[in-house]
Length: 336
Image (cartoon, rainbow, N blue to C red; front, side, top):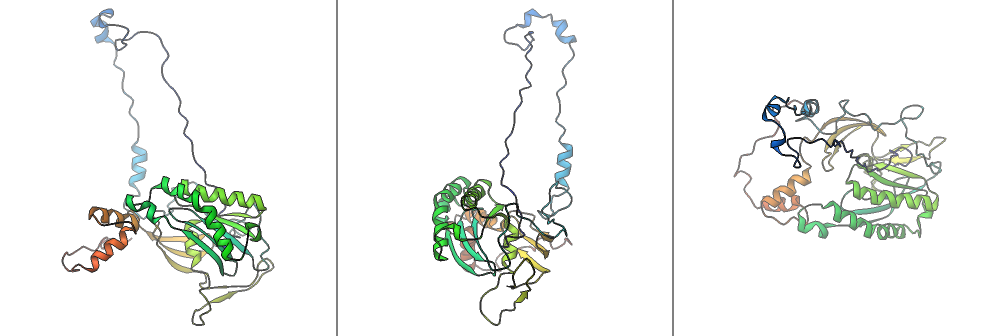
């Protein structure tokens, strides 16, 4: 994850404000329990104009939603006020408001991930070498529920995050976060209450050790992982990014532009990756996430879903007859 050009944003929780519009008038009415129907002549009641009920005009919002039914999710069609995009002088860079490390030489970053059910941390060097990593799985916690329970996931993150960070630092030969050059953390998309755990811990560490703090876009991080060098195998094709007056020379496995298939929960997308923060979404899922669809199917079939619905359904499918049921090819008549 490049700390110099990732999204810098906060995970915020919104609060709703309720207003009391009740009428404080003390005059009696035919519907007031304190008055009786005998107090008001029947003619007056019959001649009194009936109050028309206000109808909520939701037609505009419904029509707006209908416009996107059956279309790929997360595609920018001009419906959002705020769009993730780079800026800077040339419109192609992001700037971390808390500053950046010295990038003229290799630097290290502590990355923290808590977007869903697993707590993860890693120490990554700017040339792509992973110095240490640690992961706390929550499979056993959610097994009996057949899916991720956000509240339980949040509690597990809070319980394990310090242990995971310490383990990653130890594997990298470091004692504290003071030895890294910057701290990055997933800020979204994900489960808000889970993201908050990682963001707060990363913020606290950055403030404690006076380190640059960089928010990382979850989906972009998946894409950029494909650019990391894949090892010392000479058969792996890599290219060199030349040094500049601001950055050191580094190797990358994939050059921009490239085509990426992103398989990540409800954000399965096919993208043209032009540069950091510059992506064109060609297509995407129009239904539930793959994992959720498999989990629901497994539960309907009464299969154990502790390790995920996908492996359970696949194990049963391997024993079945692939020609027993003729399934249609979905969306085969659509050109988009």
